[in-house]
Image (tube, rainbow, N blue to C red):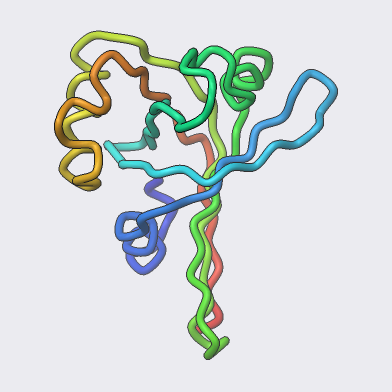
Length: 142
């Protein structure tokens, strides 16, 4: 993500939510909001438990899409009524599911630091997804 200027990098690092786009084997898009953290040139998001849903993370549509086609896009945007302040960052890369090990554990700790809602073991035993960023672009109205 070294292609991003400091303003775009700042928008990405300070954002609390992003939108993940995946596609299935028929190229049908699927977009969902995610929470995330950044480490070096990768972006990570958790596969947390979904209330009122199947607890098996393998059944999540985004997971099935990643297993079929690992190419993903992630958008962070800033919208304000004053349109001169609009901005977005688009990240494209390849997603890999990390089920266990030091990388998963350290990312889970970083997610708990950024999102206190995850504290208390809510990510225990849950995988994270690493997106190895291949391309990052940004736009700003100012």
